[in-house]
Amino acid sequence: MRKILILLMMFNFCLSLSYAATEQEMMIESKQAIKDFAGKLKARLMEGMAKGGPVTAIQICNQVAEDIAKEVSEKQGWKISRTSLKPRNAKNTPDAWEKSVLQSFKKRQLAGEDISKIDHAEILQDNGQSVFRYMKAIPTQGLCLSCHGEKIPPDVSEKLRQLYPEDKAKGFKVGDIRGAFSIVREIK
Ligand code: HEC
Image 1 (cartoon, protein in one colour):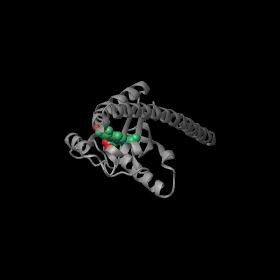
Image 2 (spheres, rainbow, N blue to C red):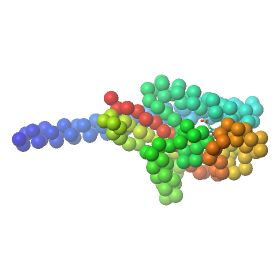
Image 3 (cartoon, protein in one colour):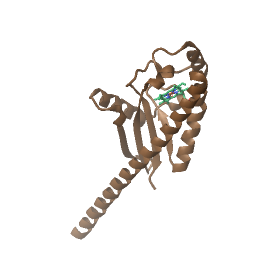
Image 4 (cartoon, helix red, strand yellow):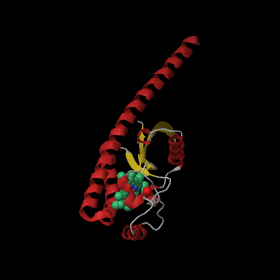
């Protein structure tokens, strides 16, 4: 009986060790995927802004963000997306877990944490399947203000109104948390 107990404890210990290793590895991979996604998105955004200003760049955000997310997701075999407590596109509305993490990010920022470093990883059970989830805060920068700031130019505002009648992603200031990248990956 005792032997079985010890064996069971050892098994449990190994399982938690292997989970810890997986979580650590997945976190590193997730950070890399987000870097890749954010870099591609920013490059396309700046290209669009340089070509035709924010009104042209809106189209890029609108069409390209999803394509890049798909491309990065498929390459890695997981799902990567962007979300926010104040989304522009209703498709980016957070699920319950993402909402609670976004709220905790806000609290962490208020407590003095540097938002460029705010992130959260967790292994959860979803219908009997273990999933790894990771979120990383997205800071608002100067570049974002013409489309997410307090004073959006009228032509940009008009275009946004046409495309996103339920737009909530306005009124941000530099240093605010604009939203977060979110990754979901099944653990085999
Ligand atoms: C040219 C206008 C424009 C600029 C500049 C811009 N965005 Fe956006 N942003 C958009 C549009 C349009 C969407 C909706 C995209 C979609 O339909 O998925 C969006 C969506 C987002 C989302 C997804 C959540 C949501 O609200 O739907 C995040 C996060 C975001 N932007 C962050 C940023 C950050 C950070 C910057 C600055 C680095 C930035 N944006 C600059 C137009 C812009």
